[in-house]
Image (cartoon, rainbow, N blue to C red; front, top):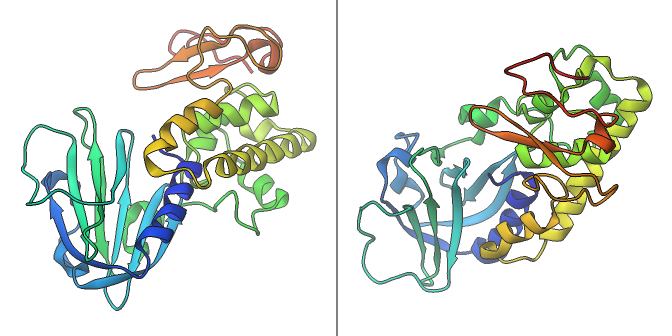
Length: 287
């Protein structure tokens, strides 16, 4: 799933390639991608893109005098830039193409989604806050006003484990499964530790890990073409998706805890005092 760093890079890429250009056609291929109907999808046609914004993991194309085109790429969605779009409208079928946006230059982009779970979402709205997922977002962790006291206040009464708290978009916007693993590894904390139990020193350590991990990932992604962002993300990860490989810090084997629809990776030596974490479905969570 694209998270804050990749969506930020896509925002920068689209700012460079879209702003000032007119959207001439929006061609839906999978109707399931459309989450709003008023204004209609065609309402963005004939309008130039004036700015591209990021709200958590949402991309927002602002148009001149027209509505906003907002998309969430979900778990298996992606944006593919085309210097020259194919001739003729796309044909509905069983492929991954969900929607195409065409510019007056002949350029444009495709939104695609792999797999059978269709969660890619497109909204056409007058205000991004009209999108429920945007309206419920917590603060952006890279915003200038997201300081340590604000972070501490968010966690003060949070009775969930750190892994779940970091992934909650209504608490902190933009962090998902991969970067929550990375942040906790840098902070040397168990993903199962209760957020409200953190000491002031631990809050400082986690805050610094949050900011540094995301900042470094954004910098690695900056200037990378949209088509190469997935590979860039994977190459920069230290523990997420690295089960069985050596930890780059201590050399211990990276371990995994599996859930019904996801998994987490961690280093026992760095994060849990050398104790393997039990499957949360079978036993108590280790702190």
